[in-house]
Length: 263
Ligand code: 0L1
Ligand code: MG
Image: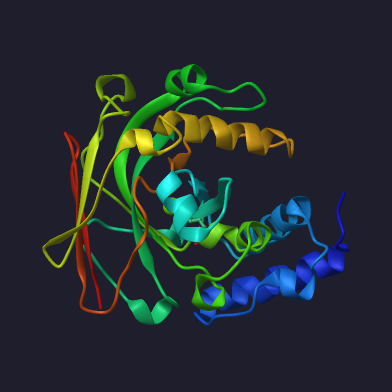
C-alpha cells in the first residue's frame, strides 16, 4: 500500500536531496504526509538515487543503519533501516572533513563488507553472506540527518536515505573468515579521549546478519546487493557528535585504525 502519488514522491526527493546538497535542515516528511508508509519512503529514497545517477554519480554500495541496540535506543526506534552510498560520500583515511558541507554530523564506528557475488533475499543468512564476501574492512560512517535536531520517525529516516552522508574506510582489510567478527573490539576516540567502546556482536549479534537483513529487505522490493558492493553494517556503538576542530580515531582489533579531522 502506498499513499503518495509519483509527483509527491518526486517532490519529497527534491526537498530532501536539496537539503543534503546545500546542507540545510528541514522538517520531517511525515509532518507533511502523515499517511505515508515505508514503501513510499523507500520510493522517495530510490528517486533520490535516480537523481544522483542522472547527474553522473556512481552508486558504490549500501548502508544498514540502526542495527545495534545502542543506536536504536539512542534514536528511539525498534528496527533497522537502509540507504545507498554514492561515490562522493567517500573520504580518504586521515581526511579533513569540511563541516560547512554538512548540517550536524555524527560519527559511527562500523565494520564494512565488500561482496564478490550478488546477494538476493529472501532467505539470506550469515552463511550466504560470508560465502559472498570478498573481504571486510573497518569504516567510519559520518551520518547527517537532514531533519532538524535529528528528530524523526523511521519512515522519515528511510526517505532521507537513512541519514547517509560521508564514510571513511581504513587501509587494512581481512578475509571475513579470518576475523572473529562477533568479538572484534572497537574503541572510538575524539580528541584523544575514549568516547565509545563496543564489540562486533552489538550489530544484530554478528555484522554479517546486518548484510543478510539488507539483502532480505531489498529482496522485498525486487532488488539485490550487486557483486562488488560496499556495505556499511551499522554503528557498533552509539553515534558521537562532532564539531569543527574535532579529531576522531577509531581502533579496530586486528584491523588497524581509521581517522579524520573535522574543520
Ligand atoms: O547509520 C545509522 O545507524 C543511522 C541511520 C539513520 C538514523 C540516524 O540518523 O541516526
Ligand atoms: Mg551507520
